Image (cartoon, rainbow, N blue to C red; front, top):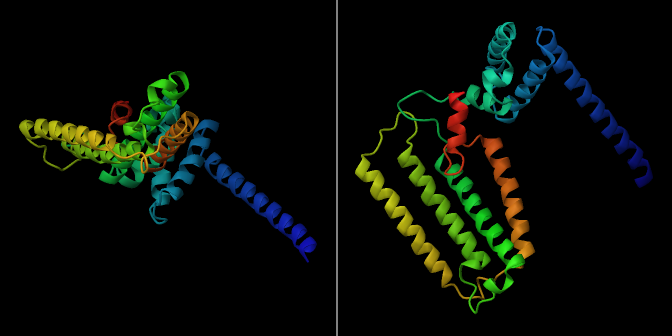
Length: 257
């Protein structure tokens, strides 16, 4: 029985791949019929995928596709590329679904929890890579009686709390559109308060006993840091995070373009 299933499964897998290839080719031909260049055709193909992945409603999709194609056709006459007009397909899909950033009156910004996750991952990555490199090149510097902030639980705690604190600060310093900006004295006190709170968490984490706060090998810290960076990059691309403590300048540059 199992021997009979294997050829069937292989045939089904082959048919599925062939169906996907035909579907992709059909979509490419659809955009090619508009008279787009090969690059713009590929941009529309990727945009179409991103619109589906990011959850655009089916009834709205034809209109935004046509508007984007028309803009690309107009841009072709002046030599403007899809990247110059819209950035990446991921960004354009996000703008079509959620609306582009508005000039003045605030900035487009991701939710508090997306910002907290992004910031927290970055803090976690920085500390794990730092202690990993120190463990390889200066192992004696980590050989202390109490693991303190070099322990994995302390690093996670500092990253999680730091991520939430800086997400809160980000929303105060650069409030989203339609949200009133806080007075300067409030923003200054908020930044000082967040920094004091983070230092307090860092100090508390350093007092954790070794039994619940073990120090991992240097290679483990480096592996966790690399995985964290990859995960954060995926998170930023998947949800198009705007306004993070480590990513907001780049996003602002993209908007200016």
